[in-house]
Image (cartoon, rainbow, N blue to C red; front, side):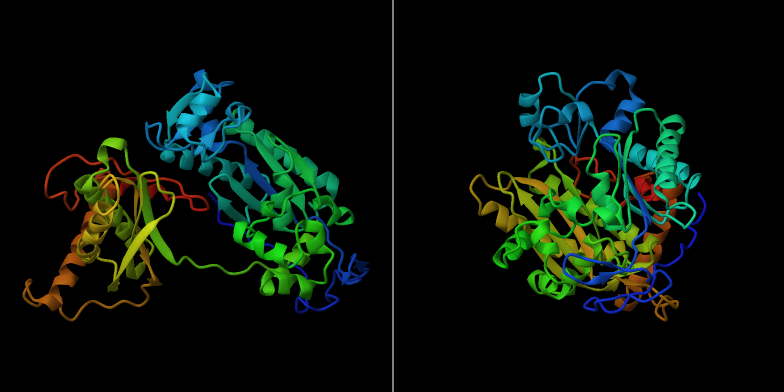
Length: 463
């Protein structure tokens, strides 16, 4: 797949509290409801959201599922929840997060299929390649969402709509007829994302500057990324209960209600101004796993945690990071809150160091579990490597030639062994060689899964 082509940057803007913008596109300017003068806001972004993506891939792979209500589940258990629901299943009120037992009650004809994350990544790559045939991909936002910046010869309403139709048709014809998408077109990426949610499935919505922000007034505040229950309560205390009340304030007042400069930023975005993207950086690497009902005791959970730790350490090495903190987190049966504990690490990417730290803190989970009613029963276990930093300009260790049992030499040797295991598993497949389990017993298969907002590399399916 070709590398992204840098897009033309947006016109520069003054500080967010300023009442005007300067630049090539600054004239003529348009007044907002608050009296501030805004620049012209041409259509600049196309946002594509694949409809019911995981379930649609399953229907594409298995024609017998087409037209039927399908639920994709992480494990074969009524105690787990849906990670995706087909368009047909959603008509019964089933959605992501619906417990499987409840989904079965809502729809007697429901078909439940286990998730196949590697297939979802393969179809994702095919979709991205197809979009590239029509327009450069500016940002892959998630496994089923992609954003593309429109250039000057693409941003008239007619040209943008025609482009959207070509992309939709290309995906259906060359990737899969079951893979429909909803597309939003707007002056900035946030609005294009909101537009893609306005008409599903297979929608196409254009938000133009002349209709903003009034076109958004019917949407709940929670539809805006970054506004959750906590922020919604904070805004309500400030007298903001909907998008209209937020937009009718001056930007600085909106920022005060928000509790920081992001409120100023959001005000301008909702009015259609295309602000530069904020830089982001990965801060953690981790995995979690929902355990099958028969594998929720002390030893199966420990073995699963070891496998998750090894996967995280392998990703750490592949991405050229090292970590300084290991976090163990879990959810007990019939408890929605997350239990967690952590331990400091020496700056490392060594599997042996990570496992030693996990063994040190795992007894804390055992103690907490056995103190609960019903004894130790874990529904979900997770391991996260945090406080990560890039490994830059690393030199060979001065201690590598010491006696193998010397503490100073041990990590050098074990890190080299960890890297050798990575290469073997990459060549011969997952678990060709691994550390443990040392005490026998069966453990849940821990495969790579797709988290919201993170797409696994295909290499992860070999870890």
